[in-house]
Image 1: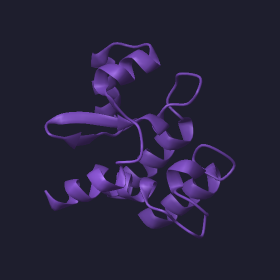
Image 2: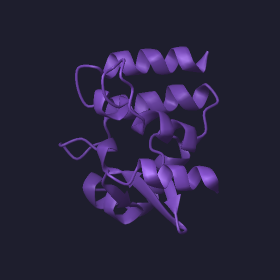
Image 3: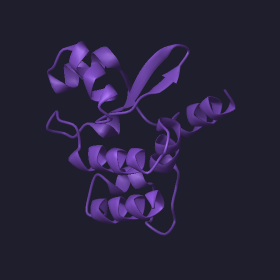
Image 4: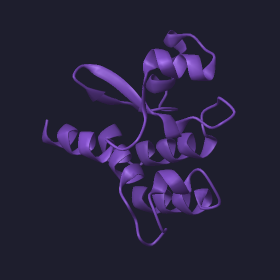
Length: 121
C-alpha cells in the first residue's frame, strides 16, 4: 500500500486517463484496452480501485507510443512489476536529463530503452 501512495505522489503532476478515456483516445473498445494491459503493451496505476494509464503513454497521433510499449516489455521481461516500471518512468534522472518517460517521447528514446535493457539483466 505504501508504494501506491508513493506512486500517487510521483504521478500527481501528470495527466492520468481512465480505461474508457484510453479507449476513446485510441479509438478502440474498452475490452481491447484490457487486452493491452494483459499483454503488457500498457500498464496502469490503480488508485481507489480505479485503473489509470498515464496520458504520456499515448502519442499525439492517438496511438500507443511504440517506445513506451517497448520499454514496458523490456522491463517486464526483466522482472520489474508495473509499479516499479511506473516508478522508473516517472522519476527524475539527471543523467538523461529529465524523466525516462519524457525521454521516450523524443530523441532519448533509444537511450532509455538501452538503459532499461541493462537494468533487466
